[in-house]
Length: 336
Image (cartoon, rainbow, N blue to C red; front, side, top):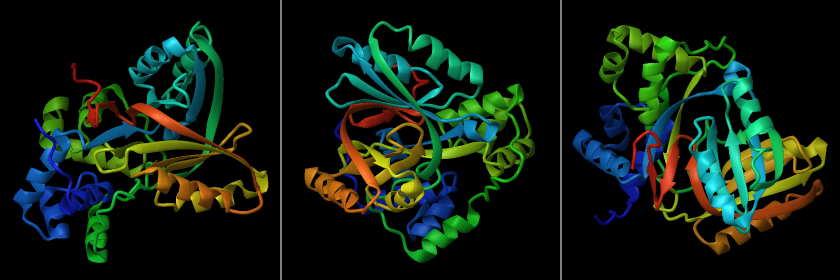
């Protein structure tokens, strides 16, 4: 079946869902000033074609854990197999083949210290195909997760943005974060498959009342324990070029540089990390001219930039809660 072209309304629907991932269809229709049937039909097509997925994920940072980014150098013949094995793990959130194809970049989001140590201290170092391993702690995020990349277009009127923000849950990151329990797992599993799963379906999965589901869901989201990620197939939106940037910045200027890069429309993720490259950024581009212009802007940020490494992403295998197959996103829990 041929893929339908992505038009401006599709982009505005996606942008609206980024602002309020669980917004009901009637609210999206009000914000976009189109019929509810049109919004529903369009969104279901976008989701069915793997252009967009909303995923509910537990944030390990709110439970006292740390995000890690790893760069692996593998034997060239084994890099794809190692990358696929990492992508199959629930505690690995992002996997890509980079550089010349023998390097893997991955983001580890373990919910427990034992889970982290098992991967970083035991499994990867003992893998014969892995030639080198760099592991960096993510210290501070400047872009990503709470402010999704919106460089694909889909600009909304100020009134539409205000309406969506008015109705989305308020997150209090200063509130105590509850540890999810075994009773929560059926609900969390359903939200990992589809972060927009209706309350009635969550009630059926848990055996709870709709009221109990709503209260628990509101509490997990409101404390930041559970967040809703909007995954995008960027190539389908006209942005096929993904690049990683590793920057070595004078320590006193890391925050300044991170704040600037985090505001760039090309940047989907930016964070301060441990290691000699103490700032990393992921950018997404329509073509090489866009990448060239962006790299030039980075180079002109001024004194404090000691070194810049630009590494093309040859293939993304996983992002957040989705596997990438061809040009679309796939739920990893669904067998092929």
